[in-house]
Image (cartoon, rainbow, N blue to C red):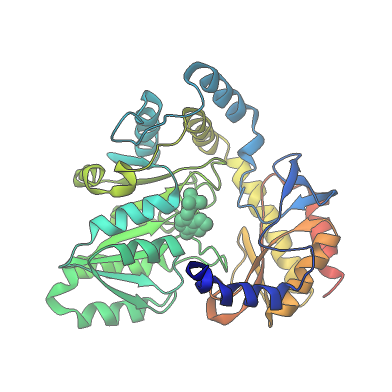
Length: 391
Ligand code: PMP
């Protein structure tokens, strides 16, 4: 049917890349989950090294118990959006706990981090405003920008002087600028130069948004992310994040010390028109947040694992992102080699993410690992051995 013609090119590109082989890196089915770090995939016991489960909380007994109780008490879903019948007492409690955790006044829970970014960026920046975003920002940030009316300008990845140059050029409009960066970038695992960016934000009186999706629970003495680690929380106007990584569930949020952000609830379409997170998801997320607050040793364990894997892969000669991080990406020159190496890792019982352009920066191809506090020494060693087999 003609309506499907537009997919022909995509189908051909897929076929020429993957052939008729059974193994499709973008359609991996996890047949059985064994733990936060292991699963059965294609009949093989496989170490999960690409799941963003940074603290391994998906199987934490407190999270499971909290979810189970609420599941029995409140049922499987809210069947409504936050603005209709989808705001339960648990959503409000989680918002209060998120606000307290970040020491700010306001928090808003969304159904996913993707929807949080879309809902925030498309409403916060209007037609008189300008968004300056780091070129390597996540697709949800790009999509949120596209859905709004603001002028959108990219600055060079992690280049604070390029950001400042563009702000300067805007003259009087600088105070109507929303700057957006990420705490840890999802593809290469590098951090934003947030001290410099926060100073620029203050100098030009711009509005600074930090997406801490990959840094919540991972960075900072209390796990609040890069803004805490860099000591600039006072200069960050809004933090956005997700429940789908260190918190081990699904959902998204924003927090801010500006009470005006509360009005986003009445303007943001993903808040108004999509079902809210299920009560059991909210319960496990609340339990996970408490664990982040009370178990700093998980963060320490995560960093021991991350540093060990980063240094081992570096010693084997892989080209990696610029700094050790729980996101460790090995750069591969071609898509074909990337697919081949990814398949070999699967043969060795190790799952990582394969990232092809345009998702990978600079037209490269990445074998992207994400490390967990839940990985044992033996699992980290097995991941290293799998990479060693083709280094
Ligand atoms: N922001 C960033 C930086 C991300 O990497 C992601 C997910 N990979 C999201 C937002 C979206 O999060 P969610 O999975 O909750 O939709």
